[in-house]
Length: 485
Image (cartoon, rainbow, N blue to C red; front, top):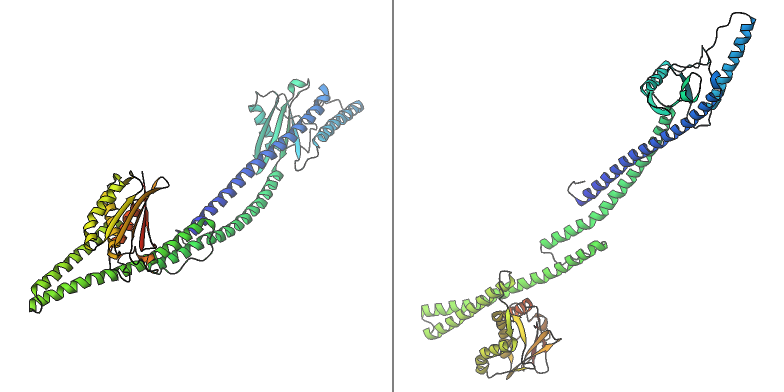
């Protein structure tokens, strides 16, 4: 798996989250269960210590007396037997107080006198605690001279962990008993915790494995559409625009897929238009250049009259100049570098100035231009030079095809739009021409190559308006809508 892919990122983040959760769960669980177990153990030791204390204190001053040494006679033997019976009775009462029904605790006790020495119920007690444990307890009691009631202690001996509770009882009795120490090994508790951790680790690892598998499958499913999109975009880069993205995707990517398909269609249309444009431009330039070259050669070799040849060369040169100017102008309009200088103008005055400029051409062709408006005051925020050129291009086109009249009307619609209609009484458009008349260098069946309508459409759209063309009852009709102020 590559490390710089979306699939790897998703997998990596999921893996980090899984490992973090495993570590947090393990730490929190161990801390929680340890605190819970220790709290439970201390509670049980507390209950045992209380029972042991009650048992010891109920015996009064005679609890754990110092065994006397009577003379060796029958009376002494009887006295010793009675004393031993008392000691056995005290021991078994203490032992019984320790036998609380517990789960894993095995509690034992140590009795200390007020001098911090062990009180033994039997001089040769086989149940004497380990000397190390006694030393640990005695040291802790010696250090803890300030406590008056009880204290807790944990210690380790020979790799075994112990926990204990030390209760001070010297102030509660008149005997020599000073402290009761209840202690228990928690080795079994640690083993239980270890077993729980092993089970927990197995569960977490199995869960992590399942999550990793599903994460890998999910990352593959998420990254698969991107791979297909990359392949499709690569086809577009190679100018293969005909293929559409048809595979199903999630809702988050559906809009992206739709936009790529729309982009592909528009690029295909634009590519075809560019090819047609280049073909038309080359043909449009070739014709006047060939005429200029032919007449120039005719002058050189004296096969044509100079006056005729010069006039043709001048006319064709003007035609080339006009084409180049239109191309440069349209190219500037297509770029963001072309600046528009907007200002508030009276729209009717703008149309009047356009009509006055075109009247000479119209009269030369025996065409009449009529302009009517239903409103005396129509204001517009526009670039006067560019919008005037766009409108004169349309008027010029109508003059070219009109029989006798070009009609222009303007009106306000929807209170915030200007509707300008320019129509002629010519033959109108062929049905196949209508979708293409605003394309660059498009040539109708009776028309010429040109850029005028393409320039008009570009300028009007940059003003936030739109232009359409259709056939009226008498001829061609152009409808222009612009925002008013």
